[in-house]
Image (cartoon, rainbow, N blue to C red; front, side, top):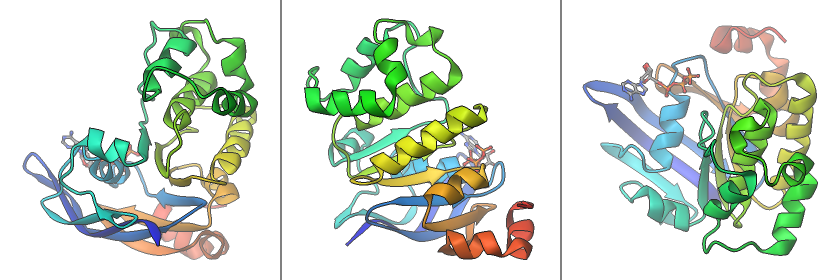
Length: 234
Ligand SMILES: Nc1ncnc2c1ncn2[C@@H]1O[C@H](COP(=O)(O)OP(=O)(O)OP(=O)(O)O)[C@@H](O)[C@H]1O
């Protein structure tokens, strides 16, 4: 069974057709990377999966359930979480309060919380600090921690390394590797080295269309393809 399958997705925002026949399959387990230039449609794809946009055609299957057209809260309850690019944290609330709000019943499973503290020790250190006072990397860690405080089958993460220092990016990569042991991650990234360190399979989106799918290692070795699709030179 696959974690996620998009088939012929068309998403319209206002008068604009943003996604055109978007199809790709995310296997269960590990990290799947969606790459693309600015404005290519990566965020719209994640928002469509999460039910913030309803596609006017096509299907989104999460495991064996059709989820397109369902309300975001229903999709979340089925085990899908979203870490948006703006992180969606409450700056005036403490780390503890941000985490509590992300739980299903306002209570922590203590073993799970310990696991999160091992992944992101800064969250334990700043547990009673207002989230607005955290560094950019710590805010991103909080955003990811909120998404995994309850067990999830699939998390959608939008450009988590944007603007972060290299040492923080390395810590994030380690944490994602651990998270991906029992959760499928669909990662939108522009940092190809980060994506490559984590990912196994990938898709490239351009002008709202999927223009390439395959293994990330094959893509990493094909510099001509990278330059053509992403203007990358690695
Ligand atoms: N709410 C909106 N209203 C109108 N147009 C939108 C909206 N959201 C996205 N778009 C348009 O859809 C296209 C895809 O945007 P999207 O944010 O999905 O791209 P992206 O690949 O995530 O880019 P970035 O890397 O810059 O975040 C862009 O042309 C954008 O202007």
